[in-house]
Amino acid sequence: AQSVAQPEDQVNVAEGNPLTVKCTYSVSGNPYLFWYVQYPNRGLQFLLKYITGDNLVKGSYGFEAEFNKSQTSFHLKKPSALVSDSALYFCAVRDTNAGKSTFGDGTTLTVKP
Amino acid sequence: EAQVTQNPRYLITVTGKKLTVTCSQNMNHEYMSWYRQDPGLGLRQIYYSMNVEVTDKGDVPEGYKVSRKEKRNFPLILESPSPNQTSLYFCASSFDTTGPYGYTFGSGTRLTVV
Image 1: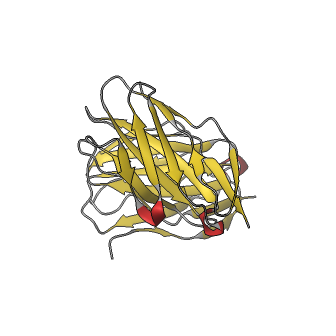
Image 2 (image 1 turned 135 degrees about the horizontal axis):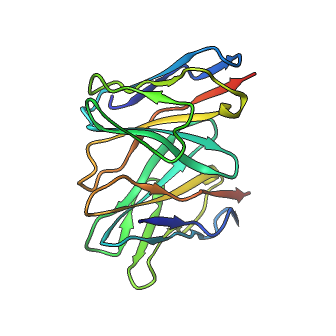
């Protein structure tokens, strides 16, 4: 079985400060890892993914994520937050041996001016 | 434009009146899935389909039906809706489930059952 944990329901940061949204996962094999963002009244949008190779993955809107195999984590980061980054963020994992993705419960990011 | 199209965006209905939410994708994706999103409960999978004529239950299938007669369409059917099915529903698709492909989501259908 596979699972994803997003330990924080809510993350608050000030505009211009760095942000981190945490994600840890559990899979029996090797993982594919994904981050999605959901803006109000919209569907989820793909942000970035980890397949293999470089542990630092760059994605859309200046976001990046760091894969840490020993800690089974895939935290989402951005060096300088914008108010427009305020949204609901979902982490997802899938075992590379095939199967469907499992989503975390989501973390609401609020960036204050 | 590559997309997943859901209709309707908003729907208010009465208990027991059958309804269908349509989902169509134009990316020739093999995998399609339905989720419901409720406050505090995240995304819960209702049904999924690995290919045409292949469907399977997700985590919360009770009260729902699906069909996959064509590759592009994956309608969600509520034969006798109840108020506890009031929710935000999302359709999603992916190229397949063997490669490193993410999901493309529709814009959502907000259903209210009174």
